[in-house]
Structure formats: C-alpha cells, structure tokens
Length: 631
Image 1: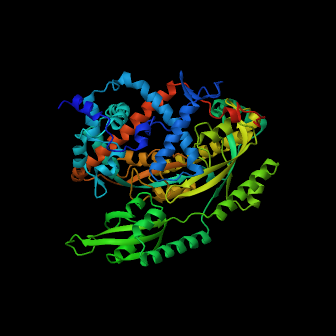
Image 2: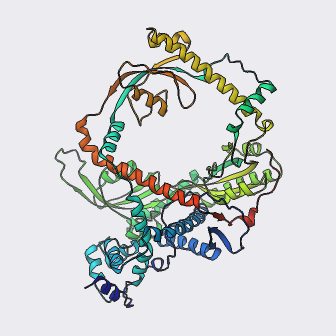
Image 3: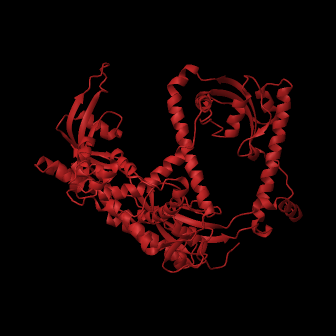
C-alpha cells in the first residue's frame, strides 16, 4: 500500500487507543539549543502590557507564554515529578528560551529546505522512531518494555486513530531535519584523529625554574598622583567595561537535620514491618517510593551486575539471597528498602564472582527537610532581609545570624552567572533595572541528585555604567595593576638572568639557586593532565611539548598567572602506533560530537546576535531601573 494511502487510513478517527493529552496539545518543541540567550539588545523598550517579549517583529504574548509554562508543568506531572519553587523559576526561564529558539529555528525552515514534508517522510518517522508517549503506552509493551513488533502490528490496524501521533511528528520533524542538517556539516579526517590520538597519549617530564612575581619582596613603585595618572592615561582603554553590577549574597541550604534523618529511617522500618506482615511490596513502592523511574513498576530496577549501583546498595544486594528483604540501607540518596527478586551466575570462567547479576526492586525514601527545618531557614532568611532593608550592614547581620556562605561579587556583566543563583532572568532584571540596595530572596537548587535546595539572598550594592570609569573610582585598582606589572617585570628579569647562567653551562638547579628562584621537576604528565605545582596551565604544557628534543631548554616565558618560567625537556614518550587502531573509532566519535556541539552553538549564537530580542517580563516590576549609582 502506498505510504500516502496508509496515512489516509491512519487518520480514521476510531479511538481505540487513548493518547496522552500532552502528545496532542504540546504547542511547543523543547530542544536544548541556545539556552544561554542573553542578547536582549532591545531590553526595556515600551511594549503592550499583554506582550511578554518580542523577537524581531514576532510578539510573544502572555497567554502563549503561560500556556507554554503550563505544558512544562503537565510534562512534569506525566513524569510523576513534583516541582518545587526553585525549579519553577528555572521553568519560567527555560520556557522563555524555548519560545525564542522555536521562532529562530522556524525562520530557517524554508531557507534550509526542511519545511516541505511528504506523507512518506512522516510515516517513516513514526515507524522508525515513535514518540516517547507511544513507546510508554501499555498497548505497545510486553513485560513493561516497548515491543516494536507489537507496535508495527498496531501501526497497520485501521481501527487505531493515529492522527494525534501524526500531528506531533509532523510538527517536530522539521526541527529534527534542521538539527541533522547542521550536525552533518563537521568532518573528521584521519589526520585529525591521529593528532588527537597523539595529544591524548603522548607524555613528558620536565625540569623547570619558576619565579613567582608575588614572592618578590623588594619592589619599589612610584604611586604618586602624577605617576598613577600617567599609568591610567596610558592604559585607559584597558579599563573599559560594559554595564556591570556588584552584589552581596548569602546562600542558606535547606538541609535535613538529624531529626529528619531519624524520622525517615523510622518510616523505612515501619514499611519493612508492614511488608513482613503481608502487605505487597509493589503497593508500598507505588505509594511511598521517591524514585520516579521505578515506583510505578513496583520498585523494579531490572537486572544489574556489580559496579552499577552505589557501593552501600550494591553491598547489601549482593550479600542477600533471592526473595530476601534488605534494609533500611542508607546511601547518599536516602534510605532503601530492597527486595531481591532473583540472582543468577552467568558463569565467570575466572570464578571471581563478578558474573553474578541480580534482579531487584526497591523503595527509596529520600531524607527531606521537615516542615520545621524549612521554616527555620525561612525565618532566618526573613530576619536577614528585614535587617538589611532597615539599613543594617549585610555582612554584620549575616555573621550575627551564623550564615557561613556569604560574599561580595566582582563586577558582573549581563552574561555572567550570579553568585549563588546562576542565570535566572528575574534576578538579572532586578540587578540591571532595580533600585540600588534592593534585596531579593531566590529559591535555588544547590544539587540535583540527591536533591538539595536552598535560598539565596541577593542585595544590589552598586551599578557600574558602561564606559571607562574615572580614575577617582578605580584608583586602588590602577595602583594594584602598577604593582602587579612591576612584579612581573622583575620576575622576568630574574628568569633572564637564570637563562643566561643555564646557557653558560650552569646546571638548572644551581642557576635557580643563584638568582633566588624555585627549581623543581614534574612527574610524567600529558597534555590534558594536571601537573603538581603547576596546575593546568596550557602555556606551560604547550612549551614543554613544543621542545620535542630531550635536553632542550626553552626561552623565558610567562604562565597564565604571570609567573616566569624556564623549562627543560627531560623525557618525551610518544604513543604506541599499535594502540591507535583500538582508539581510532572512539576518538573520531568524540571529535565529531565535539565539533557538532560547536557547530550548532555557533550557528545559534549567530542567529541570536542578528535577532532583536526584547524581554518585557519584568518591566512592570523593575521598570528601567532607578536609584543613584555609587560609581
């Protein structure tokens, strides 16, 4: 039967299968392109109050924006995942970015020739890679797993209404084709792969003379007003800055207390007692487990071998017999109640036991902060905010309240992460549009797995206007730069003296001693490795590997931090050519994936740069920014 004919009879509206609502009504394609969208050059222009934002001439209305957010919540609900306050903030930004991504990608459909879809393409896409909602539908599963043969049997059944699936795939296919087109651009040659093989596997050892500029004591610098003015005038352009802000911040993690831990353990012990009394493990897993991936399968984890679970879990499971209930077992994720359903030995010829695999189920009880714990942190946060808003010093109050994680940022630009917060656009709007001294509390996620939430208090200290600041406002910084530059020059002079001694025949260690420098040797290291005493300085590593001949001495050079060096290559070990064959495929795969990532990021960055993006979501809260700047 022709593919178009198949699609026609697939469209017959005989609803034998109930399709997940989210599949039908998703009005938005979520894909991870260009999530760092900060190019809002039109920020703050007057827009209709009903407009959340604008991209070129395309307006994003609040109803569209809110519906997109609702779709995200529905998706979380369908995944049996609760959304806290911190994730809600992230969802609002992610939804905004997605709408921008969708528009920018959509503009490219016709230009890239991916907007014309044949019925055959759609049908083959449905058959080849059905949406997750199809794979998860119990009509297409055997033993809890998607069964392709069963799916294709249904695919040819005229009693099934496939129109919602067709609509979903037809809507998403242009995005898939566009992504494939962009990702098809990079090419990795054999030369590229061999070069990367060498970079990954070649090792070296070296001796070095090191002069730390900040270890030099007798530095004399003229810091008179005239000298500072002259330095500032000469380096004025170096101090140009985009608009920036300085913030105070304090982060308060909402961590479970010992009492919270004891209560969770008590619940685990209670559930074990109920299981031993005859209650079904599967029922308790569905109603109590905090593992969304297994709870609705009765807690089943499937078959697994050693080194696939965290150590505490693995130790308990492999020590138990088939049919045994184990627990409560404490891991970083919480307390586990484990049911060993089956064990088998695949027959390890070495007899070391590593061939044993286990089929198990578990109930995970995460150790969560109790209501009293959360309330105590919120009270602490409220006390901090109230005192600051009444005029108290941020750091004095934070220290008085025994808050440990506090600080003041360096000047932050619009694209910089906000300490203790990250990239939330609502906070960024407050910082770049709000009043000096404004204070906000921000729910945050400090750790994903296991989940750790918290609250960050942010205070806007000052705003720095775009341009070159006056000498009066940055005099201390200019003086520090003068001192740093003088120290680096002195370090280079000492290094040059040592280099002359080495060239004259003095050994490395003696030359270092004569000029008061440090002599040391590296261990064996590679281009991508860490060097004890040096760190990950690419200038140092590049210089060593660039020498090539054992015994060769480098010229004087400066590392990333201004430290002066001379290095001597003591050993270089090229990789074995025979090892290339076993690594070639993996290296080429890694390189192509890396290059694809770079291609789509650069492509999308270019689209964003050319687009005129206006974010209107926070204008009502912060307007254009008021208050006197302190700089």
